[in-house]
Image (cartoon, rainbow, N blue to C red; front, side, top):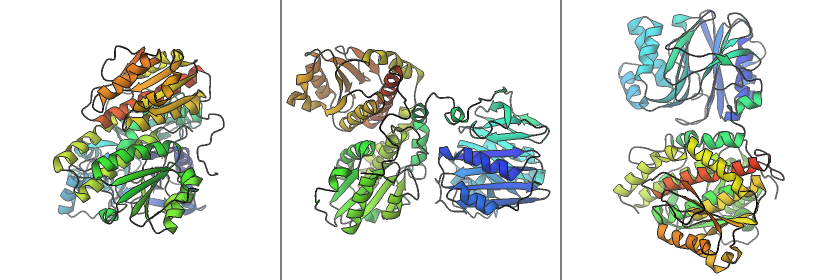
Length: 599
């Protein structure tokens, strides 16, 4: 979720870059920096935290003599959020900014170290600038050196590079991470950014680069490696921040496959899970994990409780934070206290964390916002790296929380030796497939849109599932309630016959989560009971279900958690499309706030 900006022109370069980074704040970041070229000098400014801190570093005595510059907002993946790890990264005479991940950076770094290159950061990005200078020193041609460099890189990335070896030029490359280049309103002026927002008001025409396109730009010319198409910029900055989607919620549903990749970076290895944030000894002497959270985060915690007990073989209980605070809970020091919050400011969860700290429990917070209140109180912080979530109804926060918790369950399982190496390997293989399961396909979205008109009336919804699909049912029901204002409840499917089935009739809509690889026959039997009592059934499953009134087919997968994430997307899309049909404000539903900082 990092952001890139670049500028060549006669305006105040520092001001353009800082304003551009400000427009990209919505993407999420923990540090920022700019590098500007003036004659034969490159001046660099970096700061941890907000762009205001970077602005203070730049100060008021920066003149307007810089002919070009590049800037970056960083969300830490390789290496902690420090000034040293912040972009731009330097070589001997060049600087680079980079979004994405260089998958073969260790191999490249070892090669460059053997050639005498000195590295100062913990990042994968730094190999790019050293590799470029290695080739330039050999070829004495900056363009050929850049082309050779990008051909060596593996992964998903977008790059801007400037060098004293070819002043007045910005080299660029786009592969898997968004980048747009615009013609400035003034003569001999070009701008580059990760999205439209920094470009609006400064340009009217833009190129949205396709994967694999690279080139260079000067004040008077752009060279692309292949043909490109110039189009008009949108006029609305908010629309630009939405990247063309109708709502922030829709955008955030669609970017889940990218952000879970960020959540796994540096943590998911070939045959193991690692966390820099804490040591495996944190689980020593622990005989219970207690999870405390609210709302969507509570549902992620409830999902995790199945995984912790199944994989780590440690007892796990889950508490609603607002209840936990007042139940006079029994807390013992052999309990690991784990809190979950998107914002890190949720009042009830924060107070529960303080209670656990006062009782002497080890604590971890899983959070999306660094330097939030919970991150300052907990012993350890694990960031989900979902980027800023503007939609009030949480989507990508839930998927990243669940992925992080799944990895944590495996990490503890490995340390406790509760599962064999083959199982760990198969679980890791499944984790690698999660981004694919979260990808939104047009055919699925269109099916949800068309079905939405069938579910605008009636006296309520039951979302039902078993095992981890029960908390997913709770989450699906919550999403629908939040943005459609329709009554919905999530239930364990086996509990329907213990009372709730009395409500079954054609105006009761049942959303049935029917995974192939987890208790399919049991859930099928429960749905048949509802169907026999004329409840309207919408089945979500990879297997055809002949009694369903409506059916949303999901992909066949080898692991139940891959089914889980694909069904999650379906539930989010269906809720959103029902809300759209009802004419509601999808991003800002009534009575709700994004960060609940009061009881």
